Length: 225
Image (cartoon, rainbow, N blue to C red; front, side, top):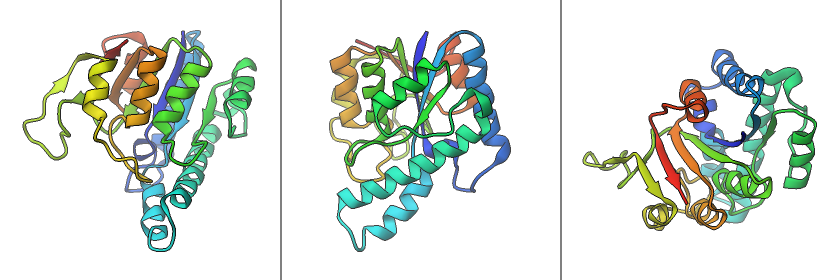
C-alpha cells in the first residue's frame, strides 16, 4: 500500500522539547511499515517550534513571511526524523513533489516538510497523496480523530468514527488559515482530500496508532470519498 502520513510537528517535537526516544519510536514505526511492504511518505509539521518563531515574527512581518518561517521549522523537524531513519531515508528534504517522488522511487522512506506559503503540512500531505496516487492519507495529530466541534474548547464535542469528504468540508470550513494554525484538518487540505477522493484516516499521533491506521483497528476517524 502507498501511504502518506501527515505527522504533526507538536507530536514529534512536543512542548517539553526534543526527545531522542520519542523520535526513535516514530522512526521504528515507519521502518516497520516499510518492512511490511508499504511505500511510506511522511510530511512533518512545524509544531511548537514554528509557532514560537511565528509569534515573534508576527510583530514585524506579514503572514506570508511568517509562513516562510514555519516552512523552515517543518524542514528542521524533517531532518530530525531523517536522522533517526538512517539508511531507510535520504539525507535531503525535498522542496517539491517531483523531487519527493524520486526519493520514493529509490525505495526509501520519503520525509519532507512544507512547500509554499499559505499551505499547511496537511495540505502538502494531501497534495502529495494526490500527486503520487497514494492509497491512503493518514493525519497523525494531537487529537484522536475528527470531532463535530473543537474538543479543546467544547466539553460536549463528539468524536466521529466515520464521515465522508463532504462532511469534512462542512466541519473544517471555518478553521483558521493563519500561519502556525493547528486545526485537526485545515480547510485547504479538506478541499484537496475531497477533490482527489482520498481515503483518509485521522488518528492520535502516537506510533501505535500510526501502525494501526494501516494494519487496522485504529481508534481515529475514517474519512471516505
